[in-house]
Length: 300
Length: 300
Image (cartoon, rainbow over all chains, first blue to last red; front, side, top):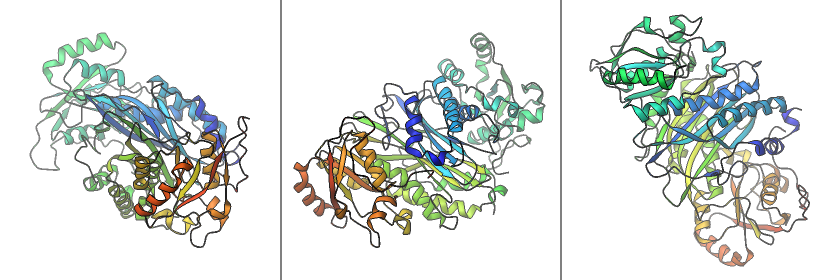
């Protein structure tokens, strides 16, 4: 059945009862706002929104379950980047009226599966028709302990730069089924003083300069060290984007212990030292970093 | 200049410094998540997301400042509906690459003006290209005191039903410049035991049945009592939608005091008793309410 024959009330009535809802939720979907308990003392509130757009982030022919998975996991990857715990999600669905309710139901199945993987409650949402491609926007709130959050800004000259996993070629499938590195990130900040941390969404070539710029530093990368995905070349690792791996800076004095305990804790996931943060010349806006192949740049 | 020639980094670098940012914000736009202080003890966290879509909620020719205003004020109207205080907003911009940066700058001016009207900080956002119409999604978090939040569910049989302002004809301009009834709603719950409260976004004909259904009650309306906007007829007041006025249920024992103190506090804004909540027959899914002309139903 087409959405235009169903209407928002019936569509939501069908979808909402099956949403995963933690018992701490005071009021979920169906009221004007969602009402949830705030983070506790000693914790900060984290907010993130992200979206996926048809023909930009997914093909029209992509399985809607995978689209839902990706739409939820993208903002959760930003929680990994802050070493935070995601808790509550709101979904905005912008969908052509001619789309089938079956498509929307499958999309929600993907959103739910992804949310459930990290105990996230879907507490509300909004739907709108559109005369163009579909878009799904997901907003997530959660928390991080005051002494655990890591920004991009804290890198120090001489810090080792590490990446998790393998880079490049995400478009061949990983971008639809990746698992945000939340467990890894939480383990890192529990056990090591990480100076700067982010997730790789636009490609190392775009994201590393952002981390360096935020830390007011340059960087030096050993291109030969980059952990390439099967079939990927260096250009892919630098520019493809959508790796959803972690990039972080940490003092070299922790290098040995980090590498050893990582192998023990996450034996199936690579951790690779790819280079260092370097001191910058003081000219504002000009970081003395290597010229990198460009990462994915939106609108270009 | 077209967006595609600018790219996300430069666009955000241009927009972000001018964002209104409360000094309580720990990390705003530019990091992976926004980091903000959580609500205090005795308060609950409120979450809302909403969107406006080109050719659905605004015309392509509409002044982008007005589009931005509307995009921000829509979710803030849901805070009025919960008697909550909005604090932090995240913006998702889905815009064709051929759109001008001037258009985006004006849109942001509208978003900022609306946010500043209620001391809301814009703490982050996301941009994406699209091959279709533009869409702007705004997510807002805030708080409400545990003993002040009002859902749609608390209506009691016999309650008076009140609406603020005038209904109908919003499409002729009000929908682009309305001011959410947050001050009015906060005053109401501070001074009166309101049983059920919501904002009118889809038209009284769609929204009142939602409040009645949530309260498991029926309703009786005096059609002659409906406060019509200039030029509007009853059908407009029931079905046009986008009134962004408050609808609430309160025991008739407070009627006189409410009407008197309202006139004193808000002399320029009508408060109209339009009818009552009535007991329902116990058949699930069948409320014995009047047949109303339908409100705006999404996708139809």
